[in-house]
Image (cartoon, rainbow, N blue to C red):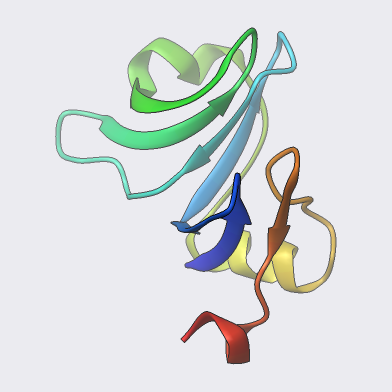
Amino acid sequence: MRKAIYNGIKTQFVGWYMLSNNWEVYLTEDFDEDGYAEALVLGAENEFGSVWFEEHKSHIVASAFGEEFCKEVDMGNLAPPENGQWIAEAEAA
């Protein structure tokens, strides 16, 4: 998990993926047994809501989940959500 400030609110993220239409999905929780998760979706509108993996999986062009997500953030390879910033681990507590 990594934390970021998005629209002035401290939010935790556990994964990220990009769809073929260039929409980005920042997961705020892991997918449940039915494939649903809460996420920040950056697309036509930027909003928090529920996403369903089955609807998105054939359109995913890049992704990072779990430890891979944390590593990509730590290495600077994954930008925070638009108009947001990652919080250093020491600051996140």
